[in-house]
Length: 122
Image (cartoon, rainbow, N blue to C red; front, side, top):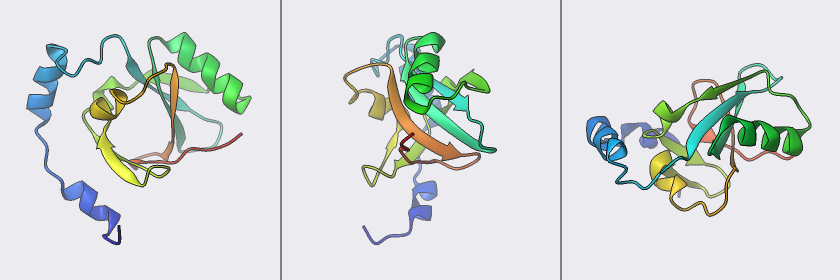
């Protein structure tokens, strides 16, 4: 608990092996994708798991009363390690997704270039 969060960047994982598992759907991610929404605040992005872009868009508007500036299918980020502030834990998004029981699902907001997700309230 008292270790520096920068140690998360030093954790080694095999991108190629994870990509192969994803291709064979061994991680059971099915149709759920990761969508990133550019918010009105510069350099701040909201992350969602969703089966499609419309669900993520609707959830964002409902939660934050804001029309997204831009939405991106960011499934390429799924093998990355992110720190979840609310849980005070880090996890690879593919594995975290398997713990989620309802979709669409709001993960949190992160600043550009950072891998720390913090849940925000509207």
